[in-house]
Image (cartoon, rainbow, N blue to C red; front, side, top):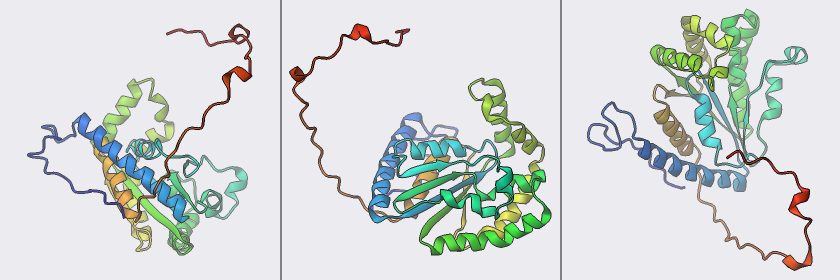
Length: 278
């Protein structure tokens, strides 16, 4: 198994930390690059060993789930690691067995799937916003542990993360989204309503944990007030959760090109180029 150092240096005397406890940019970027190299090794191991991996990302709005997913996937092959973020169910899907719409997105051998929100919508937004009945909610709490145990028994490695963010930090991030045109799209009407119902969401999360924090698929809570630390901690934990070994990569040599004089290309003036604005 490839060793990944998950120990945390002491913040008081470590030069990688700023006075306020945040990570220096250079250290963060170096650690992120190192961990992404390990993710590439894990990806090759998943492919070689035909593993099936599911990673569930849940948590508060503006807790930074998307940023973590992006850092995990940006150096990986989408043929091996893909992200699923299902939208609002259709009228037909609303009549299906609740878990049915998620099953087609589960991984085949040699794949890792990351659910950017998942079947836990029923225990969170649907519960708080009244999008499901009390009977549907109670049935979810009964069925979800059994559903996940079935996934694990089938050979799927199931890892569940809950991203926790403080009231003050969520407020700061919401305000930043309001005033930044590049991030305004991240703030939906549902996000604003969830902000108003902070206590209701807290209770829903606690009830969800009480029923679904099972031995076969426990919840792992990520302190997400510091985005950079949350990213590194999550990737480090993910790597430590799946035993893997480095797969030897055969050397690659580029083949020679065809004889350039065997073909005469048409003049460049016949093509339409993008104007060079820069």
